[in-house]
Image (cartoon, rainbow, N blue to C red; front, top):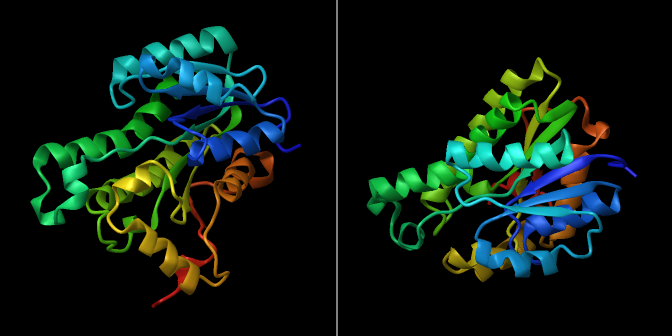
Length: 257
């Protein structure tokens, strides 16, 4: 098993259809001990039920993944209760609904800042806080989630595309900063998946149809498949890979039309 004896923190789990859950399932099946953060104390019962199949796991409330002191407080508690960890999966992103539904040019300053803070800065903060608190074991791996809308114009993705572009640039700079400590940083660019977040994108089902038609493998990716890519990136099998955006989209990104 690729992650036998490893402690992996998965940030941003919401429901069983999420990419974060697919990653959790793959990591657990490969021997990992799982830790989670989620948003909203009112979601505690739901989250505990969701992750109940992962024996020995723990979950922590984090309301404000882009707020320094809140991340410090939760990470301090996680380290005190579990010791050092071997990997972090950052599955956190958000944009205001109106900024996804309206033309991009109408994005407000507040909406722009919000999308970038939650979706990109939070990963920088998480990485920095884990380093400052000496939370990571040697050869730890950090993984975040991005999307093709960071490099191409996709209707309805709008400011989230800008935030994901910032996230991908952050991956490269973080990889350089943390590489001297043998910590790797990568992103997975998953193909479109029917998640709760995807519901905010206009005509999302048509995107699925196009990918199925145009992608070399002529099918859409699953959370299980993305989860397996994450497990690979969290494991020593990917020891020479850092600063990369790994596409898990059945090849759709290579197509010109």
